Length: 178
Picture 1 (spheres, rainbow, N blue to C red):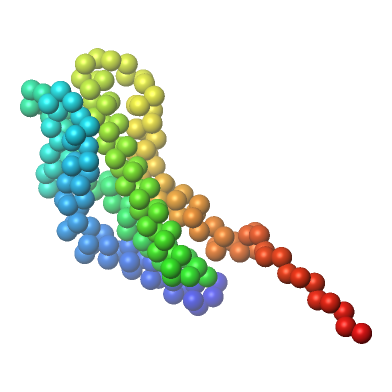
Picture 2: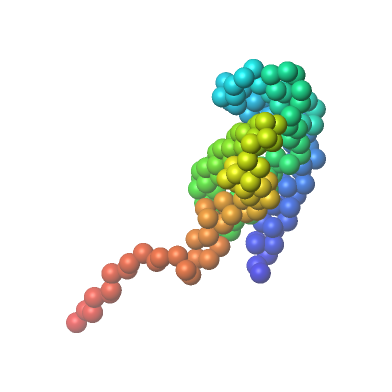
């Protein structure tokens, strides 16, 4: 391993620690409010979503809390940032483009996860099928909270980690000169 790769790895670890300590605690409530503002128009039956200091709470039409989602489990952004900044050989502009794409996908996964939480809560609440596809998908998403960022990073940057497997541009053969 070269010194530049070791340096990138150290920088990635420092970014991850800095994100978790210095940035995420200040951004988490705003991010949760954004998710709630996206999901609130989609819920029915006077269901209310509310953000507290540490969780998103879903209240049913009677005001009873039926789902509580911890905001600490939605902190995959620091991992994505650290992983993309530590990719060797990738130009900075491509890093940022792929990082933004990965962040967008991660936000979409959070929206799907919260939507499934609400759906499952109502299935349990009203005694509907407890082994539905939504229940299975929610368990997959919750189990993959730290796996999905790594998969996104691997899918969007594999050519720079494994450059010998990437297709090489065709070069014209040199012409023999007499």
